[in-house]
Length: 152
Image 1: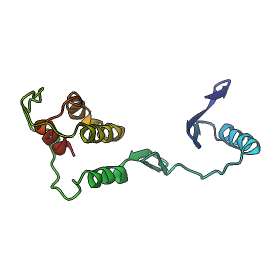
Image 2 (image 1 turned 90 degrees about the horizontal axis):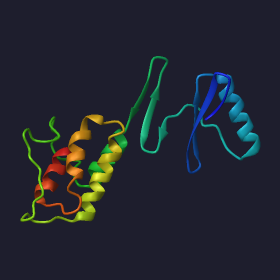
Image 3 (image 1 turned 90 degrees about the vertical axis):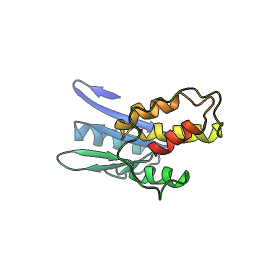
Image 4 (image 1 turned 45 degrees about the vertical axis):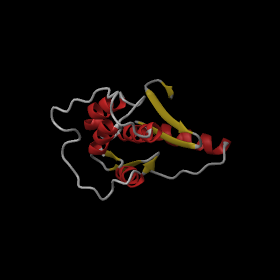
């Protein structure tokens, strides 16, 4: 953050990408000019896409979506052509440790969970079910894998 009096500029940095925001356009412009004088950089204008998040801005609102990321995840795990469902988990589903169950590839299971957790930025409605499925990353079984496929 950078600010003076009641005017602040917020800078989000990820490697070599910056997001600059604030309430005062003059303060933002000043910051950009000072930064461009010091470093080689370009101003790409309004934010449209950042780290898998699609951003649509208008006078009334800002929408953040991850449609392309969600499609990529579905394709990556072979679920793109499956039938959609309105329920990310079967009602009264009781996931539990399954010591007798057939184990599945734990690394692949963790990858799916990691992708789903990143998707929660724009899909908070999936937080509970992804959190439940996350509990079984140590030794996932077919039962847990089915639950994750239902979420996908």
